[in-house]
Every structure is written in C-alpha cells, then in structure tokens.
Image 1 (cartoon, rainbow, N blue to C red):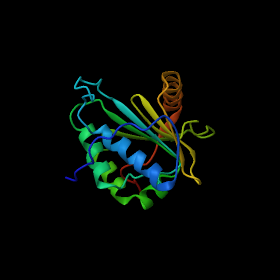
Image 2 (image 1 turned 90 degrees about the vertical axis):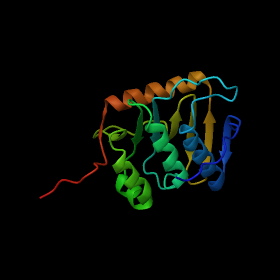
Image 3 (image 1 turned 60 degrees about the vertical axis):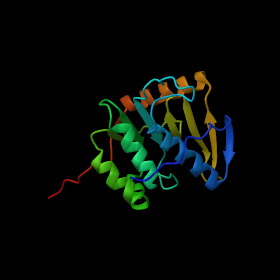
Image 4 (image 1 turned 30 degrees about the vertical axis):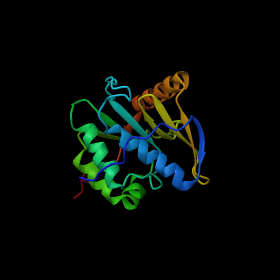
Length: 180
C-alpha cells in the first residue's frame, strides 16, 4: 500500500492556477477522502457518503496516482452505501489516459457509479470534484484554473444540480463489454 502524504491545511477558497498546483490540489482532496473521519480538533466528522467527479474526460486528473487509488479504496471499504459518482462523456479516452484507474474502477464497480448525460441533455454545469463541504471547480482546463468553493449556499446549489442530473442521466463505462 502506498503511503499518502500527511493531511494538509485546506487552501484558501478562491482561484488557484497552474497545471502542477491544480493537480496537487485535486490529488490532496482525493487522498483526504480516505483519511479517518476525525477533524483537526479530534472530534468525529460526519461520514462522507458520496463524492462526485465531473468532467468530459479525466485525462488531466491525478486518478492514476497510487496514493489516490489507495485512498479511494480506503474510503469505500469500511461501510456500505458509499458511492463515488463519475460523470463524463468520453470514458474511452479516460481509460486510455488512466489505465490504473480503469482497472481500479473495475474492481470497485459495486461502489463506483459512472454516468453520462442522457441523449439530448448537457453535462452538469459543475465540472470538478464535489466531496462533503467543498467543491473544486475547473474554470478553464486549458489554463489550469481551479476554484475552491466552501460557501454553504454554493455547495448546496452544486449538490442539487448533481442530484437533478443523476435522475436524468444514464449508466456509462460498463465494466465488461458484451458482444457476439
């Protein structure tokens, strides 16, 4: 098992820029999902039941990082009912760009829900990571700009948008391909 970095302080809400910085911030957020559910003050945090990854394809995400995969496994392992929702359009490109993640997702298919918009529907407005009380929103992939949102009003709006999308989406990225 790969050792994850020690917990870090949450960056200031706002815009962060640069490929390496954005990947590092997403990596840390994903690793933090697998940490014990205890706040820095030692009090238990509410259990996070679901997390959302939303993008057209995930080639720029640090999802092939062994520490991220170990952390996601640790988060999904202890209790039933946890779910990692992955919303995208081009899962073939994702599988080509992130082969470790594609293999990991196959092993965790019982807890990973891959979805795409039903025909005629757009992608959700949020593009990024929604986990618990924070949202990492991609503003511009070409310029690698990522915004951290912790405002409860904006968080609730993002959660409602994704819940609405989930009802109007369809399953995607099957674990096995059926054919003749």
